[in-house]
Image (cartoon, rainbow, N blue to C red):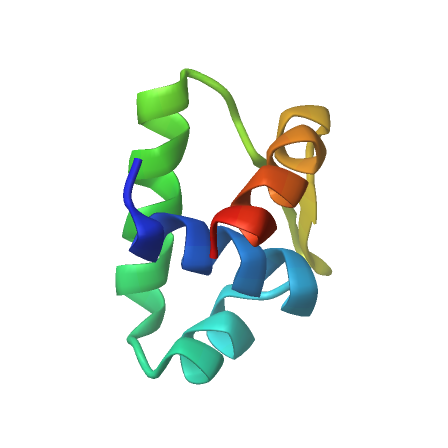
Length: 72
């Protein structure tokens, strides 16, 4: 788990969208998506539900978010 992955998690959680999170982080959307995917694979948990309206945290994502915010 890397700090840049936690930054991506927090940004996506706050904005609800990969594109907005990428803009906030000054990264490309595919880079943010890859960071989230790598974090999910490392943890063995889906952190976001993806839908046409954006991304929302799963239970695992909601549990991880406060720890990520404190780490940052």
